[in-house]
View 1 (tube, rainbow, N blue to C red):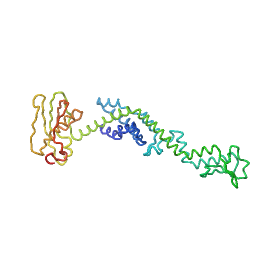
View 2 (cartoon, rainbow, N blue to C red; view 1 turned 180 degrees about the vertical axis):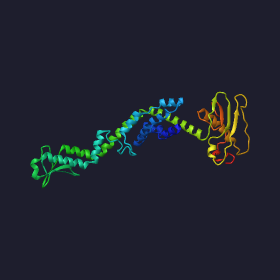
View 3 (cartoon, helix red, strand yellow; view 1 turned 90 degrees about the vertical axis):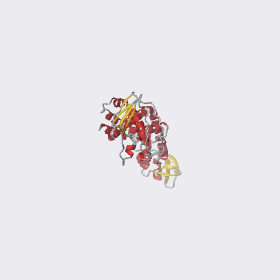
View 4 (cartoon, one colour; view 1 turned 90 degrees about the horizontal axis):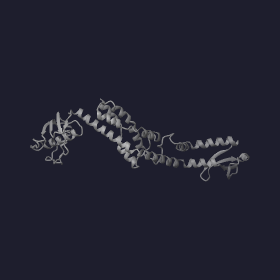
Length: 342
């Protein structure tokens, strides 16, 4: 049950190696950052699961696993939960993170409202009831005052155009606001990309920490898979020593037995000694299983040395440093197709 809980926690972690690679090379987007944050947020749960195991190696992995909380927090406070695909079009910096981004967004979303607010303020300040703020492509934004209120126009107003029924003015505040409204989209997009680039450089500088965590997660993932397979398919725990002996009782090929579910896999024993019984001559007709038998011995040997349980009822594997093979490579044993048959 503990292994299953750990496997579920690991399943939620995306590919940290790929994500940090994209970040370091400068190709990561907002969604990559969000994926990295989501993966980092699962690390505390993985550590919590690891703490339930008594195995010495798993305890070491637990102690070594950096939760990367500072990196996750930095990404979370900068990038929104569901950023758009492109970082060139804006909309991915979280509201409240940067004052200028928030201001420009407010202008973009409420440009008309801001003009209306300014118009109301100017009416109250000057006492000109007929004052209104308009816009045209020639002059941009302007303040229009009817002739009956010309004497109330403040000195800070700059005359721009004379009409039959009144006059049009501009102020520095209005020109600044006009610039903000007309350029807000481009400025906020550029500013968001600049903030994102800073974040990407900050995370890239922590690449070593993330890669170390990724390696630990990968090892845990491998161990979980090996454990799940060992339980599901009745593997045994091999004895690994330096005797030079390979002794396997009821050994099976781990892949062929799973792929050939329509046929019973017949297990076989193997004994090869360090001094005697060093060679076995295997004979038989085509499709008898000679290649499968040789490969299963090699696979069981390798599996035992990587720390896995093996597909056998009992096994004693002496440590080896090489596996030499010359086997027909054009077969497809998993689907029952031998070299000869093909």
